[in-house]
Image (cartoon, rainbow, N blue to C red; front, side, top):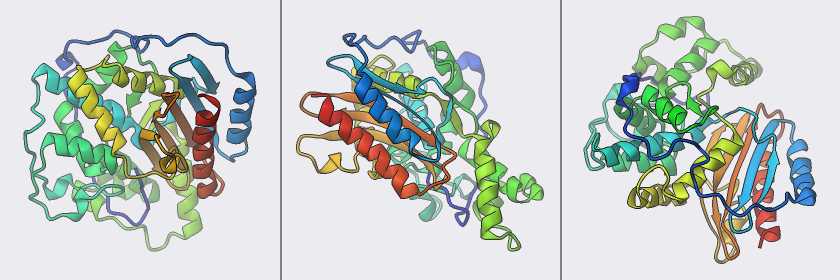
Length: 343
């Protein structure tokens, strides 16, 4: 989610019955086939810790070299704000529902004015009345982190059903906390409590209060995102890596749908973190999903395919007080260093 205060915002609710969860393909986030077990690389672990601790931010990471089973874990079980990384389990739920016959990937959904969401994504810039397919919405949710698409998918599959599936699969710390629209409405209420009653369209069209200074706004946004009750979603680096591994091994959907999810992740438009330098390397492909609220939060999770790989990696940063460009470069350095060492 690339969210800035001058962008227009809005909301949607997606509450369905818990009992609507389709039959589960796996019962635990440990369901993906376990890679070989190897001793932790203490030197590499220390290097990753130094890189992350140099940032004036809360940080965590988990990385797995699939062929050898080698891992690096830095605060990997610490719950972190996901921002748009939470769109991965939403994607998983949509494909599980397609497999169960609850939705069709080619069904079309007409975008209304009240569906529009600010922040990242392109659909908000088109005239209302556009009717993308569910497959199109999923693609935009991942590759451009489209917030309009995200809430339309959540309205279709149900936020509570996503969380019920996560719980049933054994993910203790991964859940959707708010829809995109509700997150932005809460942010507007942090600026001015009267905005809590605004309609979806009002939130989408919102502008910062005229009498609020830039410094006050920045501090309000920082405090807002530091409150776990206001997060868009929650996860840990280890759990998100387990989910990525499960997509790779078709543990949550069939091979066809799992491959489709991987294609969405490979299409990611924002490449300034994990693929920052790797995207120029021969034979390297990064399938990933970013999550951010610049300059406070910037995360990236994904699968790095290369000769000698793959690596599954999740890096999260929250409550950043430093240079966002340095934060992004650090995540890129972590990824390139792992590829260099794990051959």
